[in-house]
Image (cartoon, rainbow over all chains, first blue to last red; front, side, top):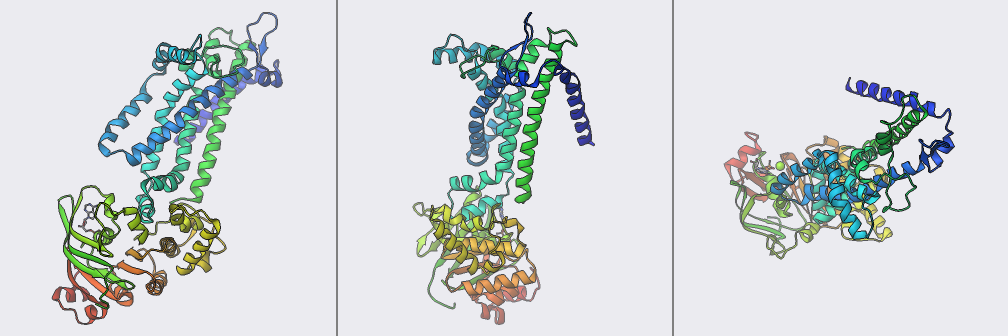
Length: 279
Length: 254
Ligand SMILES: Nc1ncnc2c1ncn2[C@@H]1O[C@H](COP(=O)(O)OP(=O)(O)O)[C@@H](O)[C@H]1O
Ligand SMILES: [Mg+2]
C-alpha cells in the first residue's frame, strides 16, 4: 500500500515535469541543451539554453561534498559503532542527529558569514562564495545521513562475525577492516547514495554560498550555479508557459533523472550483494 | 586421567559476570592431544569456562575472575601475554556456524591474511590442506568461490573447523558445535574430531552425553559452576564416583 502510494507519487511527479519540460525541446535542440555551456534565457536577441555549466556546478558541489563527507562520515560511524565507549556515544549520537535538523538557510548563513571569509582568507581569493565553500556546507549537511545510516548498519551486524574474527587472532582493527566493513559495505554504499541524492538536490544553502555565476567553472575556487539554484532563482521571474518556463522544467527533469538513476543503481548493487551474502 | 602431561590448567579459578558468580573454584588439568568433553545442564557455566581459555569473555564488560588459568605453564591473563597471540594458538568453533559473508576460499584464508601471509601459492596450499583435514574438500573443491552461505549447516560448521585449522592452532575449543545439526552432519563432525586429536588438542562442550561418551578421552561434569567430577570418560560413564554425576547421566535432571 505504502509502496503503491510512493510509486504513484513518483510517476505523478515524473509526468508533471515531463509534460512541461519536454515542450522546451520543440525549440531547443538536445545538443544545445546538454552540450553548450552558456545559459542565458533572458537575453533579448539571442537567448542561450546550454545547461552544461549548471550541470558542472551541480557535479562539482556534489562530488566536493562527498569527498569531504564520505571519509569523515564512515570514519565517524566506525568510531561510534566500534571504538567509542557507550557513555560518550549516547551524547555524540543525538548531537549528530541535531546537525541533520539545522535548516539549510541557517547553514547557508553560516557559510556566508563565517566560512566564505575563511575560505577567501586561506586561499587568498577576492570572494569566498564558490564551489569549495558550497561543497563544505553541503558536505556538512549530508554528514549526519552518512554517519547515522553507516553506524546503524555496523551495529546491526551479527556479533558472530566479530567473535569469529577475534577468535582467529585478529586485532580489533583487523576485525573492523577485514570483516565488518566488507560485511557492511552494501549498507554503507546505501548511506553514501542517500547522501549523494541529498547533495544533488540541495538548493537553499547552495543558492546562498555558491556564488551564482553562470560562467563555466574551471576550478573549485570559481563561483558556480548548480541546477537547483538556477531553478529556484529564475522560476519566480518567468512567465508561465514561456520557453524559459519550459526550459526550467526540463532542468528539473534532468535533476529528477539523475537522482532516480543514482538510487536505482545503488539499489541494484545492494540487492545483488545481499542476495549473494545474506545472513 | 589418561595422561599426566598438562597443556591447560585451571587453578582455584572463579569467574563473575558483574556481581553474579558463575564459576566456583575450578581446578582442572587438560592434557594435550586428547579430547576433553565438558558436560552439564544448560546454564551451568560450560560456555563461560571454555571461553575463558581463549579470553573471549574479554569482549563482555564487567567480568571479573580470580585464580589462575595456565596455558603451557603461563598465566594467560597476565598483562604481558598478548591475547591475539593466545588466540592464534587456541582456536574456537562456535555453537551456531558463523562463516563470514565471503566465499568459501576467503573464509579459510582469513586467518592467514590476519597473519599477513601474502603468498598466493602458500595461501592456496593451506586452504586446500585445511579443507581436506576438515573433510570438506571433496564437497567444495569446484565451488571455492561460492558464498559460504550456500553450504548446508553441517558443511558450514566443517568450514568453520577448516578456518580454525588453517592457522595450525595448538588447541581447538568447540562450544556445542553440533547442537544445530542433524545426526548425519553430527556424525561427520565427530568422526573428524577423533581424527584431528592426533595433531590438535580438542576441548568440546556438549549437552549430548552420548556424544561425550563416543568421542572424548576425558570428561568433566559441571554443575552450577562447580566441577563435580572430572576423570576418564570410561570411568565417568561406567562407574561415576558421585551420586550427582550418576543422577545426571541417568537423565534424572538436566
Ligand atoms: N554475558 C553474560 N552476562 C551475564 N550473565 C551471563 C552472560 N553469559 C552467561 N551468563 C550467565 O552465566 C551462567 C552460565 O552461562 P553459560 O556459561 O552460558 O552456561 P552453559 O554454556 O553451560 O549453558 C548462566 O546463568 C548465564 O545466565
Ligand atoms: Mg553454552
